[in-house]
Length: 367
Image 1 (cartoon, rainbow, N blue to C red):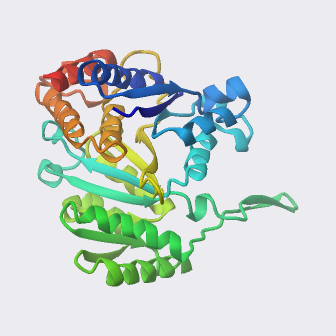
Image 2 (cartoon, rainbow, N blue to C red):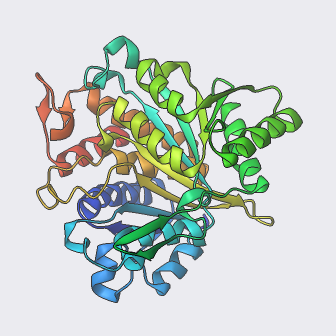
């Protein structure tokens, strides 16, 4: 069997603890299922800054570029609040996205049946939720130029960020959304702010044209992004696939994630374009949650989002669909049994540590 190369970047805070639970699953799959995973590990974020003075070293960037897939933990923490902007921990993740050309971010928001009461919303609003936010990841205001702070004199400064999108960027992200919708309920809602932003006008035009030319079988609707945020907390099950830009995608996907009860529960995938020769996409998989430095090292972090991110890796990078289904089912099984880390703890359930949750999911996967 061909080797499947994985590059692991645990990062900061709870990242290494969550990644350790994925390592156990990888080791089991190699030993018991001859999965053929070959892993290497590097530094990113604050840990990379401490070691190299960079948010990710050139050597580790090269390893990420060469791997079949990258598994990413989390970055950041108060320790690095005062480091220069260009080498802040988050710059490592932004460089990975930019250099690997990971333009499509997939953020599922799934409500596990056992956690329907954990959401801040009513159970009938959230139960059965299964939506997917497709966020454009390498353009827009996070990468647009100019990006600067200008001293205007007299104690005044001006901060400038530039929102910019080209036609091809909107075409390719909307195509990903339409293609994924075909595997789901066949519905896409495009969100922007065409009422006040020229980039929103273009976004709306290009998504509409792409739909008409190539994906007319998919139901398309449009919604202003602020109205979309309101509808996500009013009746989220009206949506199937949402496609939006980098800035609005960042905010809307966090709203959608919190609907499910905990940011510690949800994974994400960031994908590049298919290689012209091999058809493979560069890809990075990461949990939605942050580094949570306040609980790092205590053994209480929720590893489910990291494990679910590995399940997405199995599905999208290695076409190991059966294994991905089994791993996702194992997560649901463990939750159904009442096992909970502290962030999702509720009355009548059993509180477990990071390691205990990881062990339980592996046992359920192994059968």
